[in-house]
Length: 340
Ligand code: NDP
Image (cartoon, rainbow, N blue to C red; front, side, top):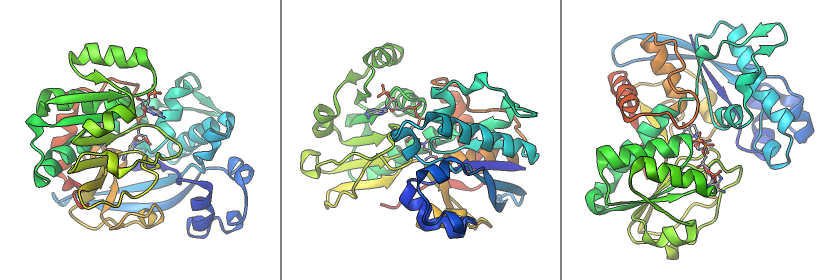
């Protein structure tokens, strides 16, 4: 059985869907109430591969909300992630994806040191961040969408916002080696990490966002921001492809401009309907078939009986592992979301 640990995008979102999640009493409650809520399995899932194979899964709502980070409720945030992991393990789930902020919290607050959750010893090999598949899907979105907009990749400048992150660094590796884009612009706040990525890649220009945006044909957003940024479409090239891979989305507003194309990044579409209700709650356009690539990674590992933390730690995603998960993804009928 596979598992998905997820969370909602904001307190407002959580209050509006509390009923559907099975928490009617949380509908008018504030952040403190959500801080004390235990994790809960809120969906049973069946996925059928195009090979005909069927698998079963569970969705674990961690009750984490991004406002917990924004208001420095760090203890609550870390407790949410660990308790959700313990809950998944207790229910016998073999491989569980840590969706959205779950893996970021796990890494940033060194939760690998905390193995004991009450009477349960966490077995980390039962979990995956799902970031290898996410990075692969974002790269495929770049490769497939750019030519449709008349952007020639070998001449294109690609800005990666969140370049030093787990997903961002993997995207940079792939775009350097496999796609060989003309120019990579590396954006993040920590200068030292940017320099070390630049020397690993042997290429790329370190830049501030404001400086990079007007130069980029393609912008990949994979920063871990609890709130999105506003951008002025007038400052972008035309055409410009924006791939928004953040959760919550990195772009605060929908950019309305005929020559600016925004693609939901790191989202896959399955070839067959998935039997679940959870993707209605996270506002997918086609909830029966569309999902986060990180969640799909745990499904793929379950299909292949690869019970291992395929994606783990930080900045260790190789192009070879992206290719491996990519092949499995295609084999079972997943494809990158391509609708603007
Ligand atoms: P990491 O924490 O590993 O990396 C985050 C990156 O963003 C770092 O480079 C960080 O560098 C940068 N960053 C953070 N804040 C800012 C800022 N204000 N301005 C510029 N750069 C910033 O995160 P992941 O790679 O694991 O995840 C990235 C995003 O992808 C997240 O939003 C996550 O929720 C989403 N995601 C989507 C999935 C999907 O299936 N679609 C799956 C998993 C994650 P620095 O701190 O130096 O600025």
